Amino acid sequence: MSGRRRTLVWALIVLASLIAITSALTTWVHRQMLDEQSWRNASARLIEDSEVRSAVSVYVVDQLYDNVDVAAALSERLPTDLKGLSDPAAAALRQPATDAVARLLEGPRVQQLFIDASSEAQQKLVNVLEDKTGHGITTGNGDVTLDLNQLARELAADLGFSQTVIDRIPPDTGKLTVMRSDQLAAAQSAVQGVRVLSTALLVLVLVLYALAVYLARGERRPTLRNVGWALMAVGLVLLVARRLAGRYVIDALTNPSSESAGHDAWLIGSSILAQIGWAAFIYGAVVVVGSVFAGPTKPATSVRRSVAPVLNEQPGIAWAIAGGVFLLLVLWGPTHALRVVWGIVLLGALLAAGIVAVRHQTLREFPGGGAAQSEIRQAAPSAHGEGGNGQSIAAATTAPSPSTEE
Image (cartoon, rainbow, N blue to C red; front, side):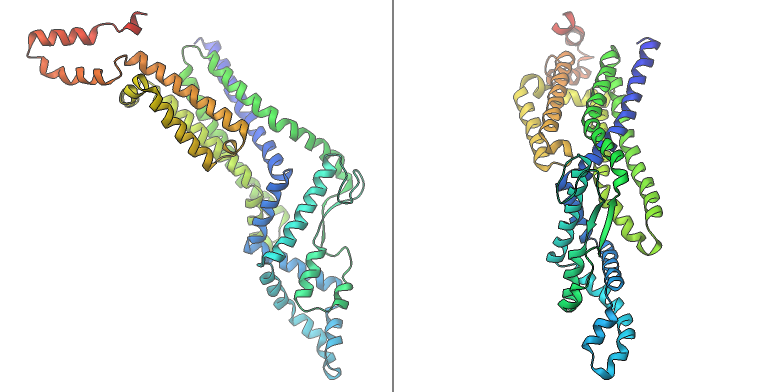
């Protein structure tokens, strides 16, 4: 390639990689925040985490003590001569109550209450952000909240509080504001952009990478290898960014007592971002290995020579093996692309294109299937002392192949 064309190719690779990072972030928001099932899965993982359960139990007990006169409730149940102990008893029961709530949160019934409350809050948020109505929320009016009131009432009943005391819990107890009404306009615009960009940017990235390889005439294999390295770099950037952003979020939004819970919550909430990062790294590594396999190095040539008999003479076996491996990957579904139709079709098409390209290369390099070439090389050393045979073998190895003549 000329220097100008090489610069253009590298510019396309760098631009595509930068857009890929943005695409990954928008895809994370789309799949993690706006998808109901992903949100429910994350909520289930949150409440199953011991650090998060501990933080929730502290919050629920604090809400009960802040909104219910626990000392008065105890005084109603104590004998007359012991009513003076209600205040110290209420203070002494705070930590045991917190421990009891933490144990109750281990049960599936109470965990389901948390998951349902979290999912309802997510649906409120999505409805508002998508300019819809639902769950009693009107777009543009009111705040979006996570309502743990029912969870607090259930836990109060499980702790032995009377129904009279439970009825005293205010309706707004346990409500956490997710988003204020004055933030909705900007958030609605952002979500609309995320939905469009999460798909459009991915398509743009693939087009730019493909264009870079197409323009690199004469150096397409090294360019494809560079695309693989670029994808690996994108994956590493996403993984590092997740770690750095996690530290900032935890420091900004948590106090020392809840830092462990905040750390676990961030890891769960950003798990899809980690999956995207690892997927980019793995796909990049596959591209690098594939481009090296098609390269001129001795190990790569040796491997191609060993598979040439199957590829050249029995391509059905090669296709069956590749199809079987790909089917196993689809059944396993280690990445999101292998769990959706468009991803399966795209990766299957790329795999098929790679097999076709490698077969064309082995047909060009080893027209005898590779096995005949190996037999000639093995016979060559013994032929040096046999004049006539040595000359015939030399002639056989230097004769142009039909593909070369073409």
